[in-house]
Image (cartoon, rainbow, N blue to C red; front, top):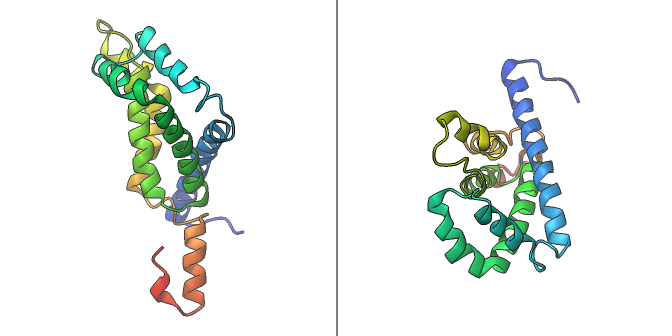
Length: 175
């Protein structure tokens, strides 16, 4: 593999590296939830939601959503979270459906931010940003994947497109 020689190529590789790194994080988070049962079937998800509610970590507008929608459907949502994290991780690592993964990851990070990062009602504005660093940074990564072409290099999608073009079948190159 040769090193990129233009600024655009270096940026494409940097975005692809970020995409793959975030994908690996989500593969790590998703795999233990999917392949284990503690999070999905034995109350792990409910424990986290109750911790957010009891600790005052949820933004006030999210409290009724967590109590009336999320907790009554906790097992189904736990499976959605587990398989969603795994799917986002796979999409990012392999470079397929990256924009879809970016959109879903951004929605997921905003949901987590508003469910678990409330610093309190009477704190300075800067503390809202400080409390949300873990989810806001990943949210910005997902926004970047949504807005960019981070799948241009180091991706299965690009490899398949290249193979189709070489085979003389450009009609199937838009994966």
